[in-house]
Image (cartoon, rainbow, N blue to C red):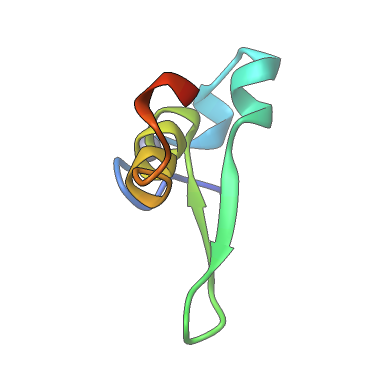
Length: 57
Ligand SMILES: [Zn+2]
């Protein structure tokens, strides 16, 4: 079962197709695939791309 590694939300609990599409996976150093839900992906992307100008968002 796929679930978000930050908040623990399970992907099967998300019923909106667009929200399911917004889930992202990343591979950790030990090779395990970790999933981020649509909410955490958004927050995470802001962390990564925080150097972009604010008006970009
Ligand atoms: Zn999450």
